[in-house]
Amino acid sequence: MIKYSLTCKCSCTFDSWFASSSEFGRLMKKKLITCIECNSNNVNKSIMAPNVSGSKKIDNINYEFQKNIKKKIIKYQKFIKKNCRYVDDRFAQEARSIHYNKKETKSIYGRVTTDEINELNEEGIETITIPWYDKTEN
Image (tube, rainbow, N blue to C red; front, side, top):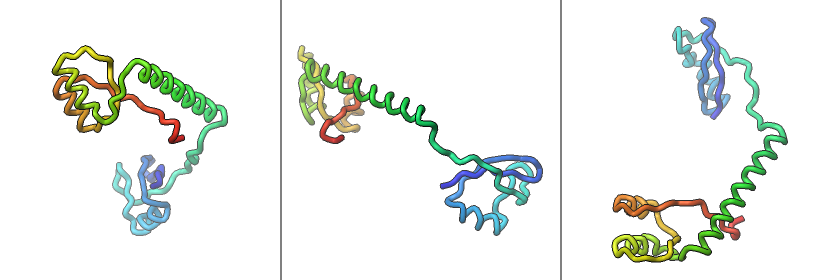
């Protein structure tokens, strides 16, 4: 997909998306591109600046930001592992057991599907999903 800024002889300017630059050319030849104001097909592409990434400074800021997020996720993971019981893919069953049996237990964490989370929430069982960084993946 490519986005072009277009101008009409009536001084109207507007943006439009096309599958490719050749598709834009094909539609222009068939006079299928019209002005959104006056409905004229006397439309041309405007001069556009290419969309390029910013400076190295911006790239470095983004890298540092992502690095800090990763560090915080790992810090939370360590806290959770230390203070909660891992229940693997039995999370939904364990959460229900704690909720309905009013068991006093250590908090739990584990794997759960989106459908299971929705069902737990409908039952009034509060859950929270957090990002999980797996060292073996990166």
